Length: 76
Image (cartoon, rainbow, N blue to C red; front, top):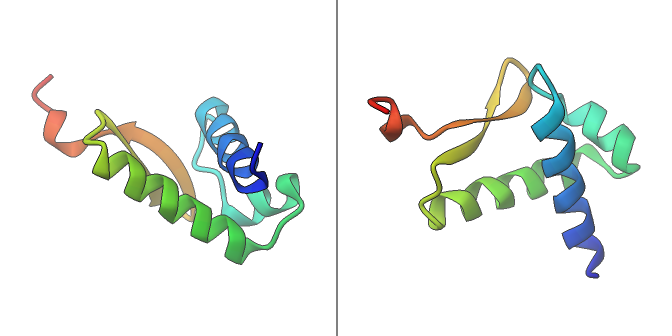
């Protein structure tokens, strides 16, 4: 498995189970990578979900990252 893929999957897993937005500094500690890498990977993930027109999105809020329902699905 590509090391970047493993890190992307790890970011998804941590954010998915977190109750509160996960700060990039905490993700960097957990993955033993730089905050710069974390920010880049989170942007890649968010762009990928957007390109795939998913029903959820990865957003930065309150100093961290979280998954939330895509804004255009509010009526549901």
